Image (cartoon, rainbow, N blue to C red; front, side, top):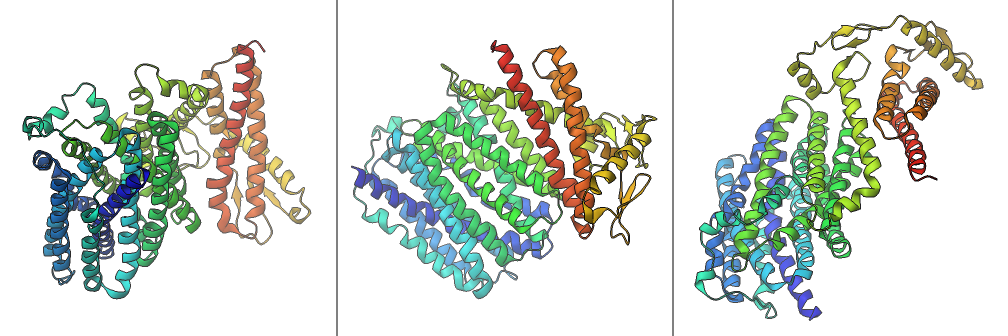
Length: 609
């Protein structure tokens, strides 16, 4: 039994691989060439419309369901579709990309019609030939085939494309598409159990009837938003790398080989996690990975030229999250198919993910064009958070609320993070000229609420557009400068540090550091105080804990500025990465530790310990 199951899984792996290789190659090479030819990011984002047949395939999926009863019927659909697919790919090989661009796009769209037809029949056959307990296995295989095809199509073939060109690669791609159906042709162990009565077969009405099922709208919302943030990030990753200065060969290796190899491994791991933890917990765990990944890109995109190691880490996180998420999406979609309508129902659900992906990809291109990549990744992070909230609030099991119980140990952390982000962005919206960068969407919120946007003025603090600079700010700046100078001079090699009012520098300075009011830590202490005031716990105890925490944050602030002075003496180029990067995030780490100590204290008190 296991031998037949493994043979069947291998057969489907080759079918999904055959779908993915040509589509991945076309979808990768065309955007890169377009970007090199100075097409806009908006136009590249709209190139996702090339996959329109995969969006419209639900229209002919009932035809395949209605005329497929036996394994032979499904084989006929799959093999004939693959023959058409291969022939069109071969014909494209004889065309020149530059002079026949429009014709190539047209033929690729037609080839995707054949590929989509094969996919409908393959998915229906997979749903019928594997039991519910093996659904995660076959969908893990499906994702692995997809990522394996992407690894070859957008990785290895891209590298070869640069060396040998368009015309020499595509004949071999067409040949592989034909070879991939050989295991299916000779496989005799696949069996299906499908009603033979024609009255139970699918019709075009079943597309609409799918949405009339009780509770199906929860599933529809889940499919639309679950990994939309990952699709948006994936759509803009290649243009992002091009704009960072990487060439087609480097992009092929970073995104096409390292990234998709990670996706393939993650898809295998995702199937195991689903079987071990169950569908609901796996969905939640994978959503947390997506949130973390999108936040990571928000972090690294603050630097206009992030280090290549940071980019590799982000690509691994992105593809790993996407790989695991795709398995749970396919598995839950396959759980929701009706008897006799397997191809139609599964196709309708996957089309929802494709459609949302196209919308998000187009929006991502618009956002990146209008603003920058940092704002784009903030948008993707917001989508990921929305998806996580949807799962927690909407998608928990009805009877036992397992996800809510699963979250119970983390409710304190989630409340802290919610309060932290709330007060962080309230500060961004209401306070000006603290020395930190203001995101474009924050500026739009200011404009929407008619909050005056002030022009920078040295050493002035603005709240809702009004100058609220306290009289003691300059004294505090001088005091902080003096304490920091004392701290730096503790090092024998730094005793020649010069202090001029609120400016610190060394003889023959490569850089001078001015302690403006934004360096006082007012923002961090204000956010800490607000978080603690709104977090549960005895109020009277907060009256001493909040000042104590502010003292600790101030002490670290002296260390932070001192380290910046010391490290930039001979390496002034490190200032931005220290000031706006590592040292700032340590600030928030200390804030988290202060909260954790309080939460532990409050919890013990409430338990009577």
